[in-house]
Image (cartoon, rainbow, N blue to C red):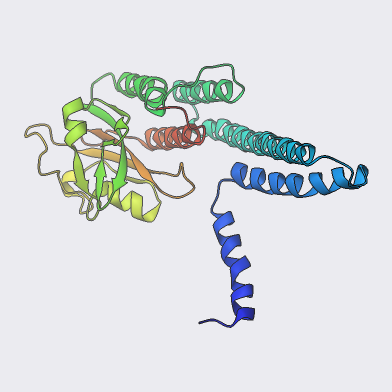
Length: 285
């Protein structure tokens, strides 16, 4: 058993570690609530020279508690919105990296504009999946195919993969994850070992992985249940950082070799950043 002095020293460090893992909004709410609820009742008693009914003191405590929660949420929520707005501005600037590919840059800015409207309360809450599939994947799919009018990309598909245990999945307890070009039944049953997979390299290293010749790339192993005759030859895998650490991968696949140019890879990487910001908004599923 630890001596009392050592236990007393460790306890605040443990509490600080727990608080440090909480979202900023919740942390601010807790701190403000604690300060208000501790300070308000003694101040009330002091101002009234202790001549106050018990029910009034209890009522004041309750009001102080509610005020602390509301005030903390306003402060925390405002700070969170400011952070997201800063991230959106930075990403809008990064869209300039797309150079002459103005259609790519325009799509990125349009998606970010929708996120700004959501933050400012001008749009209703929508699910992450709907936003990604409608505002990100659908336009991106059209743009990638239109860029190569000779159909050099072949069949192009998009998916968000999440880690569950040792596998990537395309569906979780909330339902299907965002995807484009994959059948619903395939998404529901999809499982891919993270270890030794191409997407797993992006997930484990936190770095974008790309290949235009998967058949000769040692990082890639075909999925054992992949349809014969539709083998993928090109892939871009981008780590997703929605939770502050890598919690998934954006995968873009094509059935032709040399499907993705350097600008295409930059575009796909920016789309992953759009998805990261969207996940900070926590739309309802």
